[in-house]
Length: 254
Image 1 (cartoon, rainbow, N blue to C red):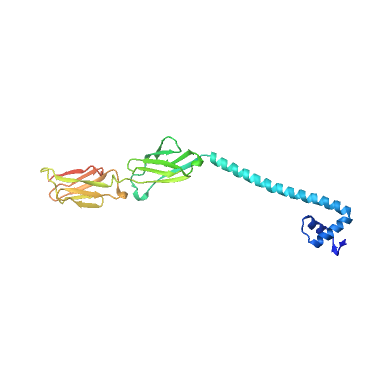
Image 2: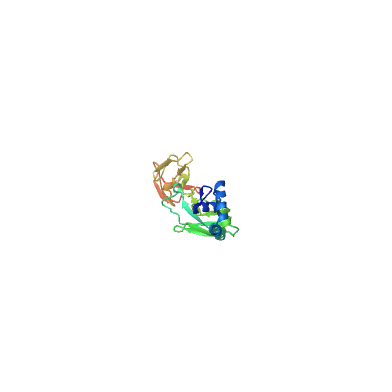
């Protein structure tokens, strides 16, 4: 049907319900509806159906949004209530490692999240520690760690609570020094220019009979063979334990 030279179609009526018509089209549609009661009833029904679809669409959109928010809040609650598991991995610094003396045992002390100091034993096969009861909201809080082991440098440090931490341990240099004096067995006088041999290193004693040898990490061990020679003296050959504090006193016999 045409009204004011405008054809009234279902598509045009649909646009009318959505408010997407021109003033000219609006006037033609209102004139058409004023003369057609049945069309008015159908238009009212269509308007209700359109409104229902809009409400249904909004319900779905808001419903999905609410579900997403609930899922987010649930995840946050779960995360806050689940304690943080912090892994402390004790690794040996290869630059300061003694191949002949692999890590055997040590002690790791941890103080975190207001707990009492915990002492954990380390072994060659178990150098990974898990701290399980750190509340998640304390992530980033300080964790006090102390490491101690024979032959290793002690570590006393504070790290942040996190998923994983590597603690690099180093051998100390207690086995890296051999020093002492060479004496004449009969006179008790120092022997100068005696050759002191250890591994592939040779040093000469000074006028006081003193000597000192530095042993690199890759050649250190709990005991070292020392060979001392001097023309006119019997050679001296023995195994000793290196020490940075205890001198070796060696007596040569003519």
